[in-house]
Image 1: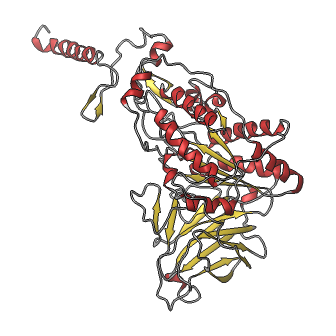
Image 2: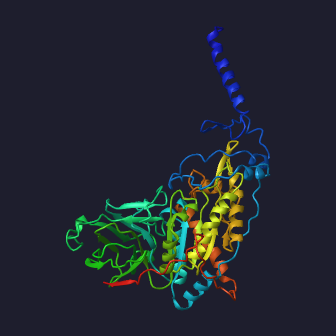
Image 3: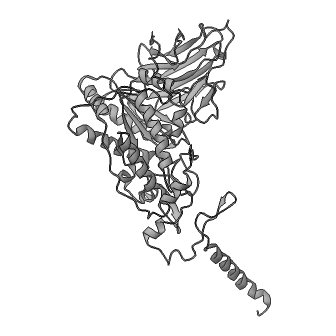
Length: 506
């Protein structure tokens, strides 16, 4: 029993404790190559620092991928420079009070008008994976349509990575479409991106072929209504958006068992075709007989009255990538869709403990907001502030130190550009609220402590709807006018309106 072998466990434990003690001396943020070394806090549970001191520690990344919504990839067009980091690196971190901002006059006037006579009011909701699969937007759309009328799921790109799990529209498509999007390194100028950040090219057919002949050879897409909301289960009418191409191109549209070919006659940068079934349809199939590369963008399912809300989600987007959409196409979509509210909901792909300053992000998003204001001159713009996001610090999950910095930057962005701002962080419950959402039973968020699930998205939609209705209940402004569209930063004037709408009554 007194042999040297009996002492081996003791020396092994002592060696491990000694190594962990040395690791505990590492400074936060120290890296070895491309790997960030995390400090070890042996006595974190008994030597708990005050919250302010804990918050000042550099935070590690979230604890893994989302369980429902895929984790995003950080997309940042420009990192902060050394001067910006030095200016704020020593600042004491705290979660400031960041108030909401008004500025929805144009949208609120449109809501009052549709309440009075049913005139249409359209909303574009741009975001990242937080709204992927119609999360948040599906519930918000349903609440607005229930209150103000309207039907339809809005704009849907020709194909999407969310097609398998989006519940508000079912979508299938052939595998021969060629796609360019916001993440394409150098999308060809001949095929400009559309408003969703995508452009699709159907497979060209020999000139002798048409959709009336070998339909099986044509690129196709089919949409089916469905999901939990009755107002999006049938297609009352639809708009097809496409670019210029050959003179003999056409599309075969099938609804309610009836096939009708339509010429793709438009030659403008963005053309529209109205498709209106005799009776509302549960499904719509489009097969494209194009004879050279022709841009096709998407289909909007809508009603001629009430509210239509378009979901423009793009996984991994920080918001800055929206500048890849050419201004001519953006303005052409603005003419066709006449938005009254633009919502910009970004942040989870930007928030990082390695950024001490977000002035670089303010500058980049200022350009995005400026383009939106000129492309959609009749629209109010609402910036949704960063949601809570947790990081593990000293063994427990707390609000990531980057969140208050980014939130303040977003509020300044809104204030300087005269847009509205809604503080989602505070609406969720403020500091450390994400922990409560994850631990709720049933849970409202995923265990990546960043993304909400369907239940959490439903709750956020209710909170946002409540904010909009609070603004709606206030007395109407005496002046809801918007400034005239300004030229692009490149000096170009906004594009002319799309080609005359081709009405196709079936």
